[in-house]
Amino acid sequence: MAKENEIIKFEDLFKEEIVERKTKTNPTERKNYGYSILVYILIMYIFATVLFLVFSQISEFKVTYTETELVLNEVSADLGGLAFIDEQSFHLYANNYANEVVSAGIYENFHVIVNIHNEYYKSLLVKSDETLRIETLEGMIQSNQIIKQWSSGIYINIYVAENQDLPDTLSADVYILTGPVTQMTNFAMSLMNFVVYAALLPFIVYFLKNDLIYDFKEAKAMKGQFTVALVIGYLYLIFGNIIANYLSRLFSSLFNLPAVEAVNQTIISNALRSNGAVLMIISAVILGPIVEELIFRKAIFGLMKSDKWALFVSTFIFGSIHLIGEGSISAALVNGTAYFVMGFVFGYIYIKNNKNIWVPITIHVISNLISVVAIMFFI
Image (cartoon, rainbow, N blue to C red; front, side, top):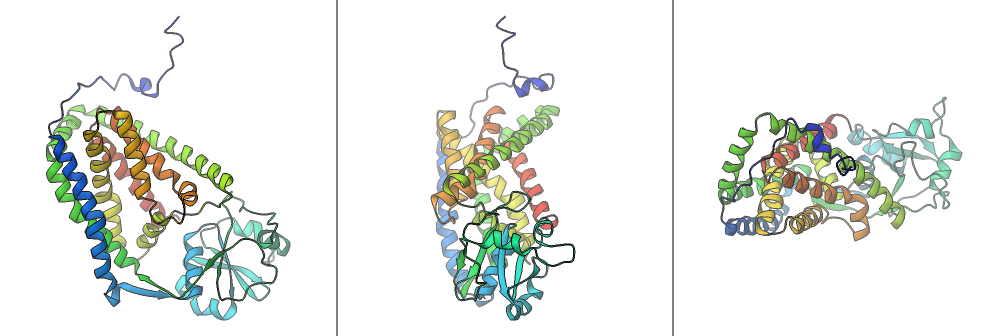
């Protein structure tokens, strides 16, 4: 009777392929885990800060954006973005943003600007004769804002420049952008990210080389079981994404704050669409996943006796470092829940596979590769 009441675990579906693995002893002294974390902190924050200051002095690495360009940048990065640009400004910048934003029509002598990848704006805003549905648009931009989402469920976020003229009927909450702003180019950001990770990897590999070799031999001995572990792990990741999306919507409703792309993700997306794309691809698909898994899984779990506490700590730190650029805790929860969930999932995968680091590394690489391809060719 007891057996009949047992809950079937997901792994049981693969019980013929998965066999119990022997418990292994850690071949690396614990101090090396501490050294690798120390090096990570020194390079990721101190060295990166110095590098940023150096790059900031190079004129070729800087670009200045007007307020109108800042608005267009936000709409190009936000699938739910909406803006109003006057005729003169629109034609001044139209060619530069031709592959990123589009005019849905004219309203009170302003171009209604939306993200070019927003597949739902036409069905919601544009009539069959290519004119705007005025009542629908006003339902989006008036103070009562009876229409808050596109047909896809993506929140409508309105961006305006501080010193621009606006339609008289616009009274909904908006994001106000002040310019001009001088910042580093996307290429410079890609280069800096690449240099930091390239500097990190040799040191971390040096301190954790015994673990890497030992785990590689274990993974090689697993043969077909390794592939099964990857499939199961990636399914965990998909399930984690579903939970993250649900939590993001929940926090969005709780804080009355629309969900937008996380700052970290925006930086990556912009870099992938720039002349620094190759450097960002290497960083995001290869260097980043290896470094992050070695630090947040191998090193942190190696230092802590309790796997449960290690999972909690690694999840919290992994999520937090990806959300440093967010403006508030509420914004971090709404826009960055996925990072915390993914940190938990990768930690769980690591534990379930007898702490073999090559399993989460491979899944992390595959996941980031799919995301990069999606950003570059489909989003």
